[in-house]
Length: 94
Image (cartoon, rainbow, N blue to C red; front, top):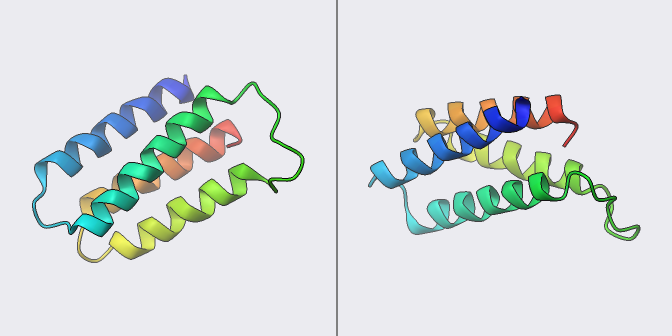
Protein backbone atom coordinates (compact mmCIF):
# COMPACT_ATOMS: atom_id res chain seq x y z
CA UNK A 1 0.00 0.00 0.00
CA UNK A 2 2.69 2.61 0.82
CA UNK A 3 4.38 1.76 -2.49
CA UNK A 4 1.16 2.61 -4.37
CA UNK A 5 0.83 5.84 -2.42
CA UNK A 6 4.44 6.70 -3.19
CA UNK A 7 3.91 6.12 -6.89
CA UNK A 8 0.81 8.35 -6.72
CA UNK A 9 2.80 11.11 -5.03
CA UNK A 10 5.55 10.81 -7.63
CA UNK A 11 2.92 11.14 -10.37
CA UNK A 12 1.52 14.20 -8.60
CA UNK A 13 5.01 15.67 -8.34
CA UNK A 14 5.54 15.06 -12.05
CA UNK A 15 2.26 16.81 -12.84
CA UNK A 16 3.26 19.77 -10.66
CA UNK A 17 6.56 20.03 -12.50
CA UNK A 18 4.77 20.00 -15.85
CA UNK A 19 2.34 22.71 -14.79
CA UNK A 20 4.82 25.23 -13.38
CA UNK A 21 6.87 27.61 -15.46
CA UNK A 22 8.43 29.35 -12.45
CA UNK A 23 11.03 26.63 -11.84
CA UNK A 24 14.44 27.03 -13.43
CA UNK A 25 16.09 24.29 -15.46
CA UNK A 26 18.52 23.28 -12.71
CA UNK A 27 15.73 22.79 -10.15
CA UNK A 28 13.59 20.91 -12.65
CA UNK A 29 16.51 18.66 -13.63
CA UNK A 30 17.33 17.98 -9.98
CA UNK A 31 13.75 16.93 -9.26
CA UNK A 32 13.44 14.78 -12.37
CA UNK A 33 16.67 12.95 -11.46
CA UNK A 34 15.48 12.54 -7.88
CA UNK A 35 12.17 11.13 -9.04
CA UNK A 36 13.99 8.65 -11.29
CA UNK A 37 16.21 7.62 -8.39
CA UNK A 38 13.14 7.03 -6.21
CA UNK A 39 11.54 4.92 -8.95
CA UNK A 40 14.80 2.95 -9.21
CA UNK A 41 14.84 2.45 -5.43
CA UNK A 42 11.28 1.13 -5.55
CA UNK A 43 12.27 -1.32 -8.24
CA UNK A 44 15.22 -2.52 -6.12
CA UNK A 45 13.45 -2.85 -2.78
CA UNK A 46 13.87 -6.62 -2.84
CA UNK A 47 17.57 -6.47 -3.70
CA UNK A 48 20.27 -6.01 -1.05
CA UNK A 49 22.39 -2.85 -1.47
CA UNK A 50 25.96 -3.22 -2.76
CA UNK A 51 28.42 -3.59 0.10
CA UNK A 52 30.61 -0.64 -0.90
CA UNK A 53 27.86 1.91 -1.58
CA UNK A 54 27.04 3.04 1.96
CA UNK A 55 23.35 3.10 2.75
CA UNK A 56 21.54 4.15 -0.44
CA UNK A 57 18.33 4.80 1.52
CA UNK A 58 20.12 7.37 3.67
CA UNK A 59 21.65 8.99 0.59
CA UNK A 60 18.27 9.18 -1.14
CA UNK A 61 16.54 10.55 1.96
CA UNK A 62 19.26 13.20 2.33
CA UNK A 63 18.86 14.25 -1.29
CA UNK A 64 15.06 14.49 -1.00
CA UNK A 65 15.36 16.52 2.21
CA UNK A 66 17.88 18.83 0.57
CA UNK A 67 15.60 19.36 -2.42
CA UNK A 68 12.68 20.03 -0.10
CA UNK A 69 14.63 22.71 1.80
CA UNK A 70 15.81 24.30 -1.44
CA UNK A 71 12.32 24.55 -2.91
CA UNK A 72 10.32 25.36 0.22
CA UNK A 73 10.16 29.15 -0.24
CA UNK A 74 9.64 29.49 -3.97
CA UNK A 75 7.69 26.30 -4.70
CA UNK A 76 5.67 25.38 -1.57
CA UNK A 77 3.34 22.98 -3.41
CA UNK A 78 6.26 20.98 -4.79
CA UNK A 79 7.94 21.05 -1.38
CA UNK A 80 4.75 19.76 0.28
CA UNK A 81 4.55 16.88 -2.18
CA UNK A 82 8.23 16.08 -1.53
CA UNK A 83 7.47 16.02 2.20
CA UNK A 84 4.78 13.39 1.56
CA UNK A 85 7.30 11.41 -0.52
CA UNK A 86 9.79 11.53 2.39
CA UNK A 87 7.12 10.30 4.79
CA UNK A 88 6.21 7.41 2.50
CA UNK A 89 9.85 6.47 1.92
CA UNK A 90 10.34 6.37 5.68
CA UNK A 91 7.29 4.14 6.16
CA UNK A 92 8.72 1.79 3.55
CA UNK A 93 12.18 1.77 5.11
CA UNK A 94 13.77 3.39 2.07
